[in-house]
Image 1 (cartoon, helix red, strand yellow):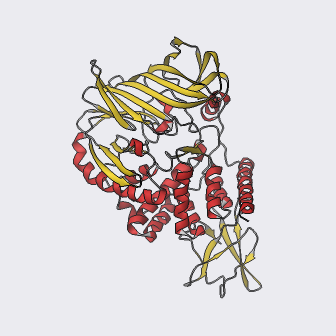
Image 2 (cartoon, rainbow, N blue to C red; image 1 turned 180 degrees about the vertical axis):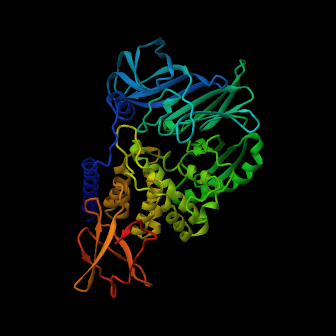
Image 3 (tube, helix red, strand yellow; image 1 turned 90 degrees about the vertical axis):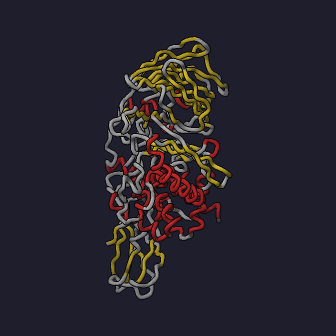
Length: 554
């Protein structure tokens, strides 16, 4: 029986996904047009899949006065097939000085932001090899980070230089040469950032060494021992100070490193030493152990609002509760904790531990992390409070376009992946109707896909299997279509009937209804009218659980 169900679930999942893609094309819901540059950036060609990236050594000097960077990146890789040519990525406004292989320069060509390297001999499948890219230039300046990408050049309130990188979406190749696609995370990396004397750099992982270069610059070497996606690798340069702590977590002591600007240390101690341990306690309970014990956990003050830089969360919330002092839910619950500490750290599990192969599936990062805010509230203020928060965020939903974007062109879907995605997951929890099982699913996701890149099928298929329910049409409706389903009621021959009006094929989401004032009972409407089998229910006294279900009722 179990195997039979799983086969049905897998088939249903495949049908809903392929059906949705066809329907979107027919309905014209994805109207974007894409260029050759988009395909080079977002697609997986043999020139990318021919090698698996194992290690980077990124070594970059920041000339802050000239807004100029120069340096190199060492690529160590394993060949997945025989090849003599590969692609890496670097924005066209940055100059490649040379590409060096086995001590000699080798030829390369450029097309838009893609770089193609031709080796003097064939690289054999299974072999390990390396090359180094030397580059320089004035990288794109981010004007409104983290919503646009590039390097932030500014000063702190004392007039000292303050620099940060933020490149989610647009890609890490906006400031360093890399294999710029989420599907292939580097296994480990050494990040060497040289900054003017008197300033410090804070990057991912653990600080291995600080070296005075005797030329007015100091180099900071940070090592990341765990797989990391490209956009997470960061440089933060400023007048930083450091204090630390320890959290006794599920895998033992976890080091906590805090890097505020020197004059904000008191504010940081008050804010961060409260909410960081509270966050870790909540999320280790719901999602499993923090995924990067070897690299530690850091908070780094930045001149932009924030970003989920792995093991080095970027923080710019000005030591306020809420989102810059605001409650995004309008319920009051969002003002009891620091939004950036909680949300961006939640990405350590969803986004950094579990990473979508294609940015079209960024809902895997953002929907779960948006929902993590509710679970944090539930941990400290109760389940009702957490669900009130989720419900309150609906006012931010636009229903403008599908949450899943087009594949292969480096394009995200709707920003509804945050609030609509969080409400979707709360509905799935409600449908499963077993909080212990729901928690085991969330923890199981992080264990099963530990340090892995994943697809839509991976995540939805896992939840479907573990829940023992075919939830594929539910995910299909909310992720592949912009409209939410409508639960329609009619009276026939004195009896109440219901059905779903929805886009997803086979949509049959169980929903809670009741006689007004009574207890909720699950009914299982389909897209055909079926009788509502609840004693005493009528069109005048039927009540639907629209608190936990984000639906329309007719």
